[in-house]
View 1 (tube, rainbow, N blue to C red):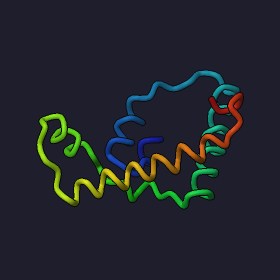
View 2: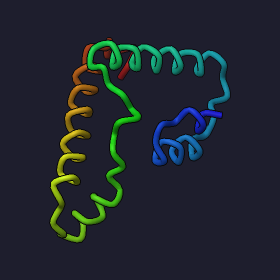
View 3: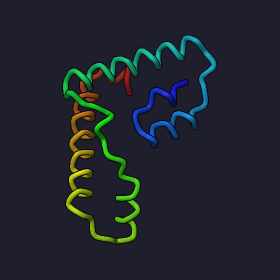
Length: 99
């Protein structure tokens, strides 16, 4: 099951909420795109999904206009850095095969 492969609680929840595709050819194309993107991200940035902090509580605190601790801010920085590297890596993919 896909959820067992997720590295975070949020990822597991998203995996469990996914609806399966019913065409083998569509599934193969999507799987190939995912493999290509994941490979590019790992090679280019050394990105490790397991190291990302869970920001759910931090986001709730921000919505409540609460101050963040240094540790929370460091977690936000880490996530933003990983997001920037991932976006940069994904931008190298062919737009027609990976919109």
